Length: 572
Image 1 (tube, rainbow, N blue to C red):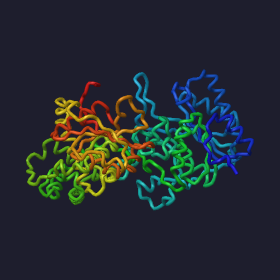
Image 2: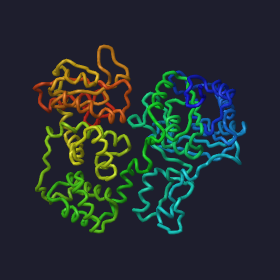
Image 3: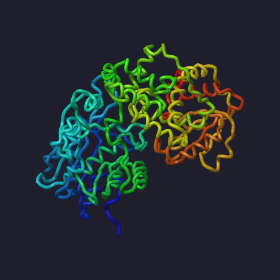
Image 4: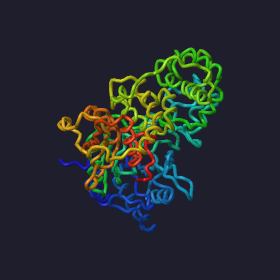
């Protein structure tokens, strides 16, 4: 028998919900992220109606939603500044009761030049019956200040229900909690001002075909709090399908509507690819997913005793450089232990950053480096591309530089995991040293690009990256790019690159990339298979290959390259 739930219907939600209501459908939770009427052009819908028409349409879909809600049902609406108050009033006039007006706060909002940059969305939390509704507070409880800051034995071990307060940027307040002298002084991601990272273009959960995508962690909180396993969750504006994906992961039934046939097709593929119990994408702790600003770290660095730091470095370095001590997990662990023995204030990240700052200020120039780290570019050929892609991923997550990545043990481990997924069986030091090598040599390769002419390479060759095609790829040096066929091809040419690399052996690199396709697809999903585009450069010197790579990165700005490697090509 055909069931009305576990379905994504293509079509208008108002008419569709009326049909479901006629079938006796009832849903426990609806999450609606409707068009905001701000002029955005969707696939088949232009988000610009006359104001009165938009408000009447809003009333119509809210009325259709309330008809299918269970008597104890819940509605969440995500909406922008322009119509948040109107949506609240219309919903209350229809009989909804407002329980919370939540603010979803994010960094990296769309940049504005004539007003303040928008960095929030309104989340209106309604219930149909104010006396009877689902709110699973045990599912979303968080540690209290008594637990996190004061180690108070009177604290409830189950934590507390969230509250609200304000700060400018959560990362810069959170780190002052246990490690600093001040108590936790800003809102956490669990108050009624919520901090969740937006879904950036290179995020693992990015659907790729829809630019207005809700983070899975935000949806998880709502679905866990306001529904139970096997309840039906409705999304009348399904878009990329994230609500339905998270509902399925959390063992809920789901139903949705979407007007775009293309979005429906892609969303159904996303839904089919997950199962109940699959992990939710995105960091559990939003504050730790991005670092504090440099200014916040300076406050910590000022308090670090430079004499103690120097003594710790001399105890741990074994004659190696500062870069080696920061990048080598074994040496860095010895350095951190030495800092602890010296009684230095701060944490490992602060000590590492302070050590680099001393080196850059010339305060370690009197120390001689008796041992060199010798890893050649030939040795790095097998994994350097993985280090570059991992570094770009960390920068996209909000880390301001490679130094911040390597100095923070948690971030450095995340970097290692990303690189190892793409090129396994290498050490953390090798991945990290390759990233340092890329940064150090970037200027020289940019200069080499000025003497580079693309015509010097052999004719462009292009293959779909499959096992069967490997033998057709020459085992020669060359520059290559990985491209996404689904991005749309150019007549007579190749698709825009997602990553541009160079290697001493194109076939070996293709084999390595083929082995890591699952990891690559997690970073940048591609349903139709990756293509490998090769410039064979037999006999060309290493620096010449690097010059061509730099030129191509500068021309195309690929989403997986470390863009500091790209030459300034003047837009050509």
